[in-house]
Image (cartoon, rainbow, N blue to C red):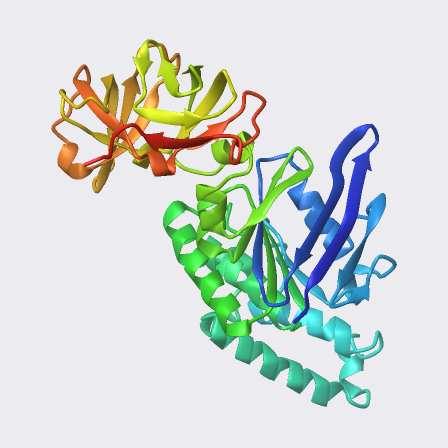
Length: 384
C-alpha cells in the first residue's frame, strides 16, 4: 500500500497540450477517481503514472520513492484496462498466473517442457498455482479457471482482468474505465464488487472514468479534470454541493444543473425575464448566473409570493420520480425540476408555481467563477 505524489506534470503530443502543470497527492489506501469528459487527459495521466507514457515535465513518487526513471514493471503498480487485455489463447488460470510467472521464473524456467526440469521451477509454479486459486476464489471465478476468454461473459472477463492485477499484490491499482464495455445492470454489480474489493484490500486505487455515477459511488475523493487541467479535488458530495467553478457544476449531476442568467436590481434582487426571484442578494455584480439543481425546485401554491411561474414542456416518468422540463419567461433553455412520483398527475402544457431551496442555490460570475464571499443569498421571507 502506497500513496502517490504528482508534481507539475505536463504532457504534449506535438502541438497539442494534453496535461498542463498538474499536481496531485493521493493518500495511501485511498480510492481516488479521475473524472472528466473524453479527451481531457485523464487516461494519459494514468498511463504516465504506470510508466507507459513519459511526461514532458514534472515528477512522480509512489510510496515516497521517485519512479520517473523506472520501467513500468519496476513501479509496483497494476493496471486494469478498458479492453480487459486478456490473452485469448490462454485459459483463465494462465491469464491470472502470467504476471507471477514473469516475475518469479527466469527465462529458462519459462521454456515449455524443458523449464519443468530446472531446479526450483516446480516449487515456484506450485506456489503460483496456489495464489491463483486463492485470488480466483476471492473474486468468484474459481469455477472458470479452465475456460478461455472467448467463453466468458463481459463481467467474467472483467473479473479476470481485476484478478490478474490482484495476484501481483501491487502498491497501487490503476483502473482505466474498466466498466465502460458492460451493460447497465452488470455495471452496477461490478461497481459494488470493486468497492468491496477496495475495502477488503485497503490498497490505493486510482480509477479513471467519464461516468459521474461511478465517481460518486466509488470514490473517497474525486479529481475533476477538464481540458488537461485539474479543476477540483474533494469528496464526492463536496464536488456536487460545493463546486468551485461553473464548469464543475455543469459536469457533475444528472439531470444537469440549471444555469439561469439573472440581473441584479439595486444590488438586492435577482430578476429573470420580468420575474423577481424571492431572494435578497449581497453582491456588487450587476449580472450573474444562478445554478439550481433539479431537486432544489419544488411545487408551491399559485398565490405564494415567494414562487415563480412556469409552463410544463415535457414530463419524464422514472417510476420513483419524474423530471419536468419547464419554460420560464425570459429563460431561453428549459429548466428541469426533479419531483417525487406523487406529482405524476402533471401533464405537458400545465402551468405551475415553483419555489427554490435557496440554501442549495449556487451563484457564479459571468466568467464562471463561483461567488462565495462576494455574494450570498437569503429568502426575502422564511419558507414554510
